[in-house]
Length: 409
Image (cartoon, rainbow, N blue to C red):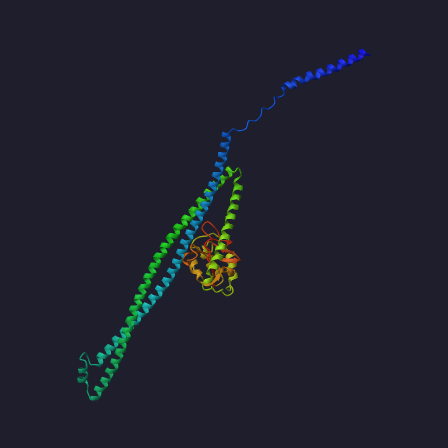
């Protein structure tokens, strides 16, 4: 029994030893414990911080460039708007001066015809007087040629009547002469005014064409550069171009909201500051046909802007409002400055659909008006905004909004 236990105990020890021996290769193959991670040195920390700061600065610089180029593009649009309005006003003035010159020339022609008629009548009277006097001997010939005392009396009476008629004819001819001279002078003045208006319109057209070319170039350059900036921003911020475009659109919307709020406050402040001035009468109800004008304007959404455009395929700002109200039977001049005075003034708080709102580089000077839109709902308008854009709806609140609109009549 003891021997059997000894044998069993030996077997157990051998099993343990074999297990330990079999594990030895595995223990030998196991990796050594990992060495403790060394913290980055100060140089590495400084370099990482500098890289992060450099990236942030570059991102900020790119964002500032995006903002700056948009401001430059907006300025180019305003310059085109002003130049286009200068041309539109010059063109309207030229049409007015041409009509005045035509009327003056007609009046001068009529006066000349009257003068010619007066002179002809005077010549006929002179001829009759000559014959009645018996030639060129004057009163003596009348006496000598009279056959009797009655003949002398009759001839003297005829001469008296002819003399009266002659005096009237001379006076008429004098009046006709003065009228003709005044009409000729007026026609010359009108023709000179027409020529000056022609020259001014030509110069304004040249300036508008140059501004349009500059704005078109700015639009193209801005679009190209914007894509480059967005791609670089996406790379630096480790995102996608699509996401960066969305972010830029969101930033633009936020900025637009701030501008609209500032414009609204400015307009309200301007309205409040005019309380000491004579009140602007509130126009009577909307002009008949306002709904027609609004519906027509909305039908043009999506059509391109083109300075000088008066439809049907493209419009500038005053060309759009002109055509909208023409559809309602009201003719407006093709000029935002002149449209401003083509109806009753309306405070912004009382605007109704169909009313016109105006924008100027100096809201205290109506002569700087350069843009117009037609109100379609409270705080909203349809406009042909600028080159590179299309007819659209937009908030009326933006920089340069005048504190009063116009209700066409």
